[in-house]
Structure formats: C-alpha cells, structure tokens
Image 1: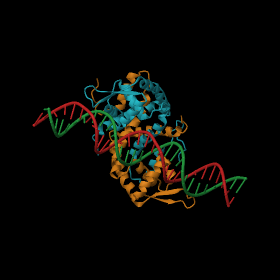
Image 2 (image 1 turned 45 degrees about the horizontal axis):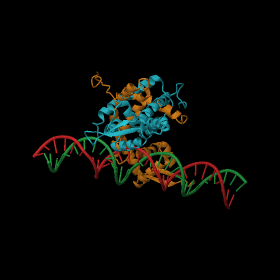
Image 3 (image 1 turned 45 degrees about the vertical axis):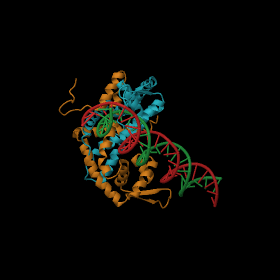
Image 4 (image 1 turned 90 degrees about the vertical axis):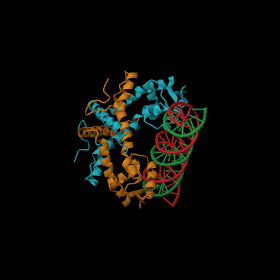
Length: 178
Length: 178
DNA sequence: CGCATATCTTTCACGGGTAAAACACTCGCG
DNA sequence: CGCGAGTGTTTTACCCGTGAAAGATATGCG
C-alpha cells in the first residue's frame, strides 16, 4: 500500500494513527478524532518522560523532585508545603514525602513560621540552588535535541496550540467536575 | 500590561507560560523554548487524565485497564500477555496484575497455547466486549467536549503536529538511549 | 539424549502516589 | 478564658507500577 515511510521530510507513521485505524475498522460509526489529540498527548508525555528525564536521573533526581526544587528556584522565595503542592500540581502528602528526602539530602531547608506555628517555610540550600542551576541548562539542551525532529516552525505552532488548549483546560476543568 | 484575558476568541493565559516567564526572569540566558512544548504536553496529559477518565470511573475501570481491554477489542483477536504489554506500553508485571483483576471480574478469559505451554492467550468475554463497546462512545463524546475549547481547525493542526512529533519520537527514542 | 541457553509469564520487594484520618495550631465568639 | 470550627501539615493504609529474580517451558547443539 504505502511505502513504509511516507516522504522525504518524512511524516513517519505514529502508533496512535495505527490504533485509530483499528478502532475505525471495528466501529466505523464513531468519531475517533479526539483520540488523535488525546491519545497522542498521552503517548508523547509517556515517551518524553522516559527519555527526557535522563539528565535528571544522572543527578539522582526524579522529575517530581526536580519540579519541587524548580518551583523554589524560579519563584525566588520561600514557599510553604501547600504552595509547593499547588505549584507542582500534586498532593500535600506527596510534597511532605519529597521534602523529607530532599531535606535529608541537604537540598532544601525548612523553618517554622514565627507567627503561625502550623506553617513551614521551605527554601533551597546553596547546594540545592547550585544543583538546579547546574541541571537546568543540560535539561533544556537535552529537551531541545529530543524535539529537534520537528522543524522550528512546527515547534512554534505546536507550542501555541498546546498553550491554547491548556489555557482552556485550566480555565474550564474546575467547572467540568463530572 | 496585558488585559487579564487576551482577546475575544481569548487565548487564556496558561500556567506553563507563567512558569516559563519566571524562569526567564531568573536565567535570561537560557533557551526555554522546549518547556513551552514539553511542559505543556505534560500538564495537558495530567489534566486530561484527571478529567477525561470520568466516564471510565463510572464503569469501575482505570485507564490502564481500559487500554488493555481496548487493545483486545480493536485488534479483534486474542493477544498474549507480552503482546498486551507492548500494545499498552507497560511492563509485563503490570499486565499480569491487570489480567488477574479483569479475569476475576469476568471481562477477559485466558487459555493456554496447545503447542507452547509458556504462552497464554487472552481474549475478551462477551461481558468485556459489551463493556468496551458501551463505554467507548461515551468516552469519545466526553473527550470531544473536553477538547471543544479549541476550534476545529486548531484541533486538526494540533493532531497533525502531535502526530509528526510522536512519529519522530517513536522512531528515534530506541536509538537515543542516553 | 541431555544440558545450556533463550523465551514467556509470574512473583517479589520496593518506591512513590493518593485519600482520609490524625495532629497541631489559630482564631473568633460566648 | 475556653471551646468549637477552620486551616496547614503529617501520618496511615493502601493501590499500582516497576525491575529483577524466579519459575516453567521450549529449543538447539554436542
């Protein structure tokens, strides 16, 4: 039928396309369009996380840990555990566990609030800051090469479209709780 | 500076854009472009999975379970556990666990291979097939509404770009093991 | 034939995430 | 003051995924 690979600048076949074709063969009546977006986002996320985290693993960090450190680094000030949970989009319990480990490794420090002794304030140690600053350039360089299969114009368009979708999702998902 | 919300057809601000701006303030020298794609893919995947799986949960299925059943349904024939692992992009151990539960619930059946007694063949029961066929239309309809914040043309472009990216990733990631 | 090697699947030990309960503390009000 | 409601954080119990080892065949080669 088709050559194994499309053309010269080659739109390679992706597995989601194959899956969608299978579904259409079984249920020709269904509109499978959403799969082509959601399925691909999920699959890209899975593949990227496997590949993309290589520089992090070399530094002995998981992505969630790096996200936590990164939140502290990029905001530039102390954050409470709840703020970190919001910022990294994860549960409070997860933040507690990560903080314990990162504290043991000397990457973050905590201090209690003087006024309200329920709350803690977390900040990067110098070692933590240096680690983030050391990893980030590598991480970005690596991500750049991972994305390099897509031409720059395509990357720009993709970023814009994803931004639009994400903006809508973030705006609406609280409302759509059902 | 900007009004809180861009324009009439409204490109809402997304959180990744805010994060990227923070990073640029701290490290103006870094090329943060990859974040605008990878960060958004990850965030979209997280939000979509939270929201998107609502119809599945009503049926008492997790997404990985549905993926497994779906693989059996869309291929239309029996699959071995290893084939299911490849097909659902997960480990063999995970497949074993899911099969145990799905078997107990009467959604799949297994039979041994007559020639090679190491291998098992898994197929949907009638109940499993009916369940998948019942859920899928709801799931697709729900996904359609979740994506509806993006206009149809944007959705088409997004699907194409993601397909191109995914094709490249799938083609290259085995090679890029470093 | 008989043993080493390879392959398919399951089991095990463990890490990491979550929801819900427990804890620790603040604050307002009688 | 002291108690009840509210909030920030941690603990607990549990689920699920993974990698590595184990278990159960198959297969090839001396």
